[in-house]
Image (tube, rainbow, N blue to C red; front, side, top):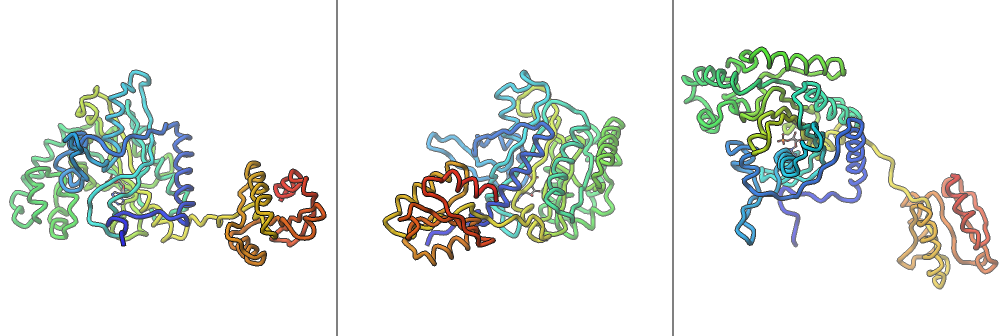
Length: 420
Ligand code: AMP
């Protein structure tokens, strides 16, 4: 038997209402903040991600689904969206039409990670990018948006972690200090961290290794080495979050190891989903667009993982949606009136109702059972003696009242159904 590939999951009909609910909530809140939706291809040239995410990251180094297509072009299934959005922004000269572009997306992503709870190889993210302004109000806005979305779902166990990376110049000074601090301890670091010591020293802070963490607990912190302008930017972001009622913790070890990240970096963590606890991450990347051969345009964004958010909702027992239901089930009493039942069903569907009928030649009793199971508000009987008299009967499944109509009076039947 062929099964779904490891790390991928079917989203079955029973789960779809939650996905739809979340997607429409995202769309609604993005509209309130005037973000416009963008959809980019599922795959891009590999070079885009190599440059846009960085060779030294786990994503590019280990996790990408990369293959040669038939024309020997190396393509990659998108592991994240920022690089694709920036590519599209540059390709379509968006900054010429609008000086600030606020974009959002909902899309599948692909990373060949080791699957575990909350970690998949095809997963889904929603997110947003604001391209064209270095105003700290946008850093704050892009934290407030996912926070509002998570709160609107009813999630409680949330922590916003916040840090500032400043600008590359002050970061370079800090890297020297960190290197000095770690130099004598290098032999005690994990193998991964030893590698990062040379390639991307800031990312040692991402290590989950306990011994690494212990060594780092006394390390000097980047926040202590920020220049005044960066501190001012950070202060403004904090003030805006406070006035928006978004609680946050400063986490001076929250780093992004690449030079085009600047200023704000943040994560929203859930205490309800185990070790893969980040629901959302983001920050400012004022140097990325230039890095990808665009103009010197600042940017800031976030991405949130839908599967993890729905897992948090499940564990916190929030987001219980009403069960699916039908407005009407058309019961076919006589098999030879099948065509009439089919036409009646079409008529009510055309009016906008959700309608089901029997396709399995079931007995009236079995059809009633099915109508019950599907939560039908009404059933309409087609057939029997009343039909011979020119009548059809509508039954309210909750109150059990019955209403008789002429079979030419489908409009009146419809009025009855929508009047409740
Ligand atoms: P990132 O792009 O790595 O900053 O991830 C942003 C968010 O996407 C994370 O906070 C997670 O919620 C989600 N995410 C990242 N990787 C995975 C994965 N492999 N499986 C499921 N969700 C993920």
